[in-house]
Image (cartoon, rainbow, N blue to C red):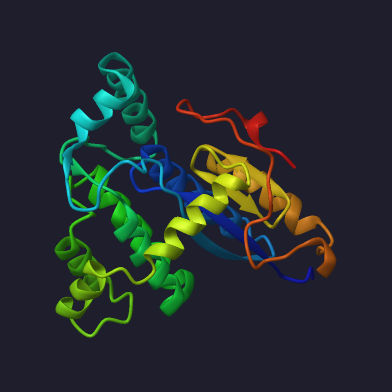
Length: 256
């Protein structure tokens, strides 16, 4: 019987990126396929922050549709909405682009705290809830009250109450780290998200079908473990410079 292997997956994303939500679901389903196939692997998944829109303020919400139409141009924005909604429906999601946007630093700080206090078991449900809040429920995830209620409903972050959670979110604890991690990802060549590094040897830019992830997991399950000198799980490995995408990339976009 093959020895079990733990596959480390580091995902860099931003909550204002609709493709990141789709990519999250596709990765989740790729992992489910690996488990259904009884691959001798376990998964250690960690999400890392990326600030796509540095000009957005923390305390000045803007109408989502207006912000993106100004940023991209009205025609391009409408085309992107149609493309994203079509892809989302393929994954069983119904996206809405109403509501407001503001800087995602607070959401990323909460994401980091969830991992620090509860690992992936706490972080992954929060990630999905935050994406759902933005793209299905038109909620403002820059609002401390919204984030506090979300964290406490999921029992993540080790807060004693919503009041404690709200006070922490309204503070600055972890904000400098979030900004530094985003800058570090950009320095390493990440210019578009989602971007994933799988087991330190596969770089995946953009969305991929679950079956694509399964192929990667099958290869890793069959391979000899990396020597200690070949991999450092302390941070995502440097990866080939990705090309910013709005259209989901083909299978060939996965690099070994």
